[in-house]
Length: 212
Length: 277
Image 1 (cartoon, each protein chain N blue to C red):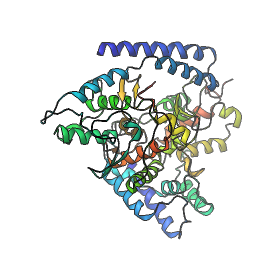
Image 2 (tube, each protein chain N blue to C red):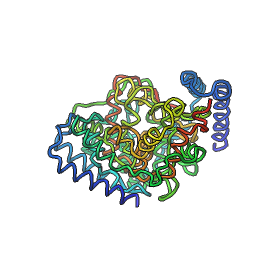
Image 3 (cartoon, helix red, strand yellow):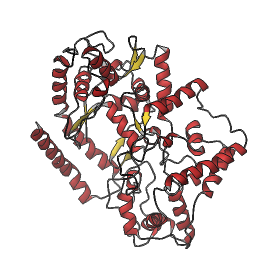
Image 4 (cartoon, chains in turn yellow, orange):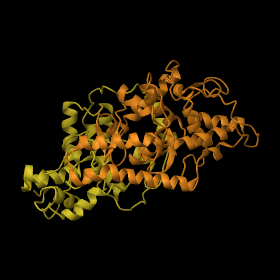
């Protein structure tokens, strides 16, 4: 199912890319000879293992554009991709965004999933603390992403904010095309309920993230 | 020997508790400078005795002991400075080798030497290149020995031949290649200064200073795993966390990536094997 969804994404975005005419010349596009050699290198020198199939080395338009521009896409190219990515977000049918912050904290701690060493179909965590400061008790947090401590206290937890956080976890590339953050909903890594639980961790007034 | 490793690991755990305990209890989060200082203190304590020395000794023995169908030692192995010259060789790798026509890193070159000099089939040599708790890798011990003989040497990776330049360009391409379910490239974690995953500091491999700091202390003894780890292991485990398919051991792709990082570190004094948390 995950694979199918990724393939659907590929097809949808690819169609737009082809229909959209020529992309601007990328600053870091390699010369064609090197490029064909590079493709061969990827094919020869990696092998599928566990859930990590060779199809993972194929780039979708976001990955390709961000690679070629070193994460600095141009104006129109960027606007198109942002729109395409936003359209991929599946919003909760019940209109609710807040799940259970306790479940969210467990997910935020969990860095498992989707590597070749993980059991295919096994549990996948959010890996959130890998990159973000979140609840104050956890001092082993990474700093690749911004601190999310007191997010709900500082920015409020109104429905618009809940929707924004849900969308951001579902598809960070809908807000910043070349964000370092994975597209947890698009890739199928996290379910709707799991994303709701993470929204609760960040915004629920009772969550340790927001308690005084 | 294994009992010794267990003691080391227990000691490391106690050190961690000593160093991090008070910070966790007294100050909580929001003190990244204090946390970094504590990590630096912990590293300094580790530096005072590096168990990689045991691997260096085992590697030296393997280097000098006749083995394989040819019953030969590796003492005629050419690591780029001529047959049998180990001193300073690692600081000039990867490089182009005339006999194979390939740009090779240390580990692929060791594979070449073991297969040609000792006549051990390549499939055997590369079957289990990374140590586990159950079985230590011979090739990793050889790595420990060879890199130890470059301690104090200045990094001087050649980018003269077209193939060496090509390897660098391909390595750079791979470094910035975003793919997989999480959209990661090497650059996602290694292109900004001062970033961490959890408490692990991440070198910025796109700057000279960052590449120099990182490359000159790898390969390394990994305290949390109680094992010596080669540079091929380092790349392999990064690709695992990138959610990529697995790179083939000592393949041209891994050598190209090594070339990109190693050449960026040129001019620095090599100081491995290192020791890591």
